[in-house]
Length: 108
Image (cartoon, rainbow, N blue to C red):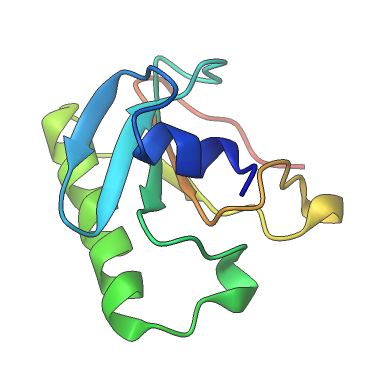
């Protein structure tokens, strides 16, 4: 598989880990859009949120988002899951963006 996130999970590509559990990996985004920009991804490959059928994985991802926010000292933050290319998804491995550390404007 030629998935960049699968390669990150396998340790084939260096990253700055923020959180790792049996189910997920959270790393700093290499092109941050806010002072805190962390990507939370399941270790099992799922293409997008539209393909997520595993409730345990969904719960682990949301718990991971909450843990990342707490580790980063965020009490207010934005969570984004781009689903499909027209919605801005460029890596087709399910992932949630956690952004914060400044006032975030409206999405458009």
